[in-house]
Image (tube, rainbow, N blue to C red):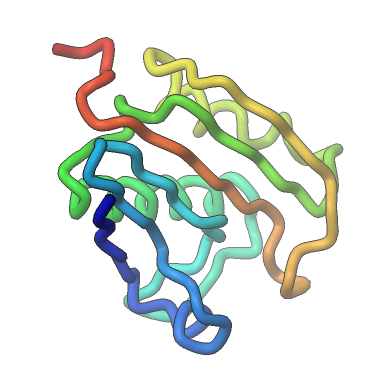
Amino acid sequence: MSRINISSGSAFEAQIGYSRAVVLDDGWIMVSGTTGYNYETGEISPDIAEQTEQIFLNIDKALKEAGSSISDVVRVNYVLSDRAEFSKTWPVLQKWFGDVRPAAMMYQAPLMNEEMKIELEVTAKKGCSTKK
């Protein structure tokens, strides 16, 4: 089985040794844990909802590069540094996943940097979208 590695240009990818996403030739796409950094500016908002929106923009870009889309996401893991803030992300989650409704899990755990409030990891399968 062959694979394609997709990079976002994040400094973390080179420093740690991982790819933003890995695409397998059978159509599966694994997107690494993604935080709310804007990779073009290197900035991250202090607001968890804004971080969540940026995360989706980052994931959407990786999925499009893989020939897929958010509508192909079948699994998502949410990691929050403070679970009490999860409800603040719900309008953004509804915006991006309201029709997709992937299987999901939310964890509370410390994230790599203090300014990170949420991290998402998704798995997608090309062509499984309910939007045809």
